[in-house]
Length: 486
Image (tube, rainbow, N blue to C red; front, side):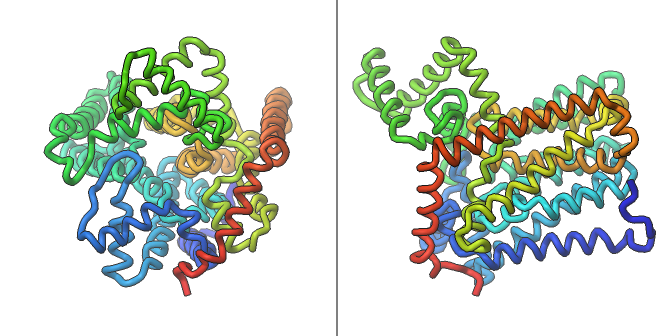
């Protein structure tokens, strides 16, 4: 499929579509007002705390204040927080350009990259994400850099260039920890991949070196974490924050199941009652952080061992909700209160129609050729491993959130879809009747799941979602004064 037949337009098309992506991001930001309500207010407040106290501890886990330092730089050094969001729009656009370059090189076909940029332009929940202060925009940018550098490490011919790429990858991974801990166990992927290349000595040592150096730089400093607690709290990430994160993903306390907080009062009441009974059973008289952590661990073990089928069902539920029909919450808030003037139907359609089209197109365009390509190229093994790693880390490791799907969509699903569209043939599509029937069955199942989710959100859990909608509207007037762009 050649979407650009005139070779003279090849040099201009990426710049044109990337400019359109950047301008659309700015347009949505220009029509946004509910920053404190739709953002994580603690990160915005931390900007002023840095200004007042001259510093603020950088903490791994749930309180990643390095982003607030970025906000401080733009607000108090450059003079306006507007510049932060413009920067956010810019690096999100740069991420798309990096993946465009990778796809063009990887498939030796610039049309794959062009298709990718077009899909990104219509992928509205990702476009709107750059208008939210604490999001995965920076994370996606860093991951796209890592994937791009991994390609060059794979293609590297000399040890000096290999060492340079390894150093750059490790540095970027460490920077990412201040935004999200997603890449903390990435060394495992490199370890497995290095042994998959046992027949290629150079590649084996390249990725083994990457694995060993990454593992060492992550875990050795944590042995001396007390020395760095005044600046970086490594201990809280590995012990306190992570167990709380895992807890909601592997018990039934989180919302309707697998969500990252209690949501409903009855869930918290059940948690408090079970915690109190656990303390009595263990003979513990005082609630401490250690007792809380141990209780959570016991609840996870009990649920998995005593109710294994419910636990498996919960994991399927988390997957279906991550790629479900319910709009991503933060982007819904800013669009609902800004661009769409409190019309929840238009807001939902604007966010979900592109997402639905991408998923359905992926299924319809899927071709077994893609499997052959992944078999005959070792780099695709690495890309597949990263894809599996992000699925496991984003969906199955902890609780689900709809926004966790966005990096997976941008970095893996849409790139593969772009290639599938580039090789799509309507004639072959219609000839493969058995595969077509399977695809239609899969689409029917997906639509059935989405219909159930829509029924639950609009009918069964109507109070939860519509109270949320009303609260956004009620909060608009007092917070309109904090609109940044004037």
